[in-house]
Image (tube, rainbow, N blue to C red):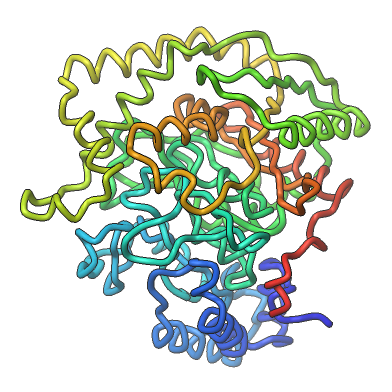
Length: 474
C-alpha cells in the first residue's frame, strides 16, 4: 500500500501544486510519525509542531489562492527539517550540547532563509553530536541517532539525525552539513543519497564562520533528483562568504535528467589513515560499483598515489582548532562531552604559527594533487571503511581511542573537505546482514553536475528506492 511518505520530495512538491495533496495533510502525517517513532531512531532534538502546522496552513491557503499554482516556489508545502548546528530564529538551538540547551535562535542562517523562501515547512531540528565534531550522533541532549536498518547501530554523524529522519520516513528530505564527511557518513549508514557540494556553493553564514572552508551545507535524500532539487534551493553566494564556487550551467535538477556521457573514472582503496583496514563488505561494494560503471560504458582506471599519511596530522590540527570556535564559558566547561574537551585541549595548545603551518602544508599537498585528480571526471572510493557500527562503539571509549576509531572508520571522506571538491555517497550496496553500504564519488571543483548525472545513471541502473527498513511501514 502506498503511504504518503513513499512520495519523493519532487513528486510531493508537484502534487501540492496540482492540489492532489494538501500541505496540512503532509505536515500532520510527518508529525504523527515523528511522535510515534522519533524516540526509537533519535532523529529530532526539537519538533516545531505548532510552527509547522501554521506554515502548512499558510502554504495551503497560497495554493488555493494562486491564479496558477505552477508559479509557486519549488518546495511549496514540503516539510524539511534543519540540522541543530544551523540557527533558526525563535527555535531552540543546542549545537548538540548541554552548554546550549537553553539557547533560542536569534537569527536565520542563510540556508534556512532560502529553504523558507522555497516554500518548505519546518518540522524541527535534527539531532547532531556536540558541536558537530564526531562522525556519530550521540549527545547529552537527545537520544542517539540510529540507522533505521538496525536500531542497535549508529546512524553516523554528524548529520545523523537528518539521515535517520529521511530513512525512517520522518521527513521527505533533510538539510545537513559536512565538515569531514558529515553528510556522506550518515547517508551511507542509512542507505541514502548524500551530496557534499563544492566549497562556497552553499553559504555557511551569517552566524557560523567559514574558517578553513572545511564545512558546507548540503542535501540528504532518498533519490538523486530530490537531492539536486534541494541543492538548487540552498545554493548561492551571500555577502561576507569567504569562498565562492565556480558557476554552473543550468540547474542541478536538470543534470539529473541528462546522461553523463562516457566518463574517465579513477578508483582507489588507498587511505591517508595509517592502520585503516577496509572491511570486505565495503570492498565488495566498491568492486561491484566499479563493475557497474564499466558496464555503463565508463573508463575505470586506478588512481595514482596522491595524498599520503603525512597530511593527517595537519587535518587533525585544524579539527582541534575548529573545536575551540564555539564559545564556552569557563563555568560551563564541565558540561562538555569528554571527546569535546579533549579536542578543545588540542586546539587550545596549538599556536598560531602551528595552525598556519598546517594550513599551508595542506594547501601545498593539494596543489600537487589537483593536476592528477583533474585528469578524471570522478574518483571512486568506499564511503566508509566499515558497515554501520553499534551505538556506543565510539562514544563509550576514552577520547584518544574514540578519535582513533573514528579516523579508521572514515578514512576516505575528509580529503574532499580539505580540497573543497564535491562528493556524494550513493546507496548501491547492501551486505548479507541487510545493512546499507555506500560508495563515494568525488568530482572536480564545481563538478556537482557531473556527479548528479552519473549518480542518476547509477540509480536508474540499480534502483534503490524500493529498499526500505521495516520501520518504514510502522
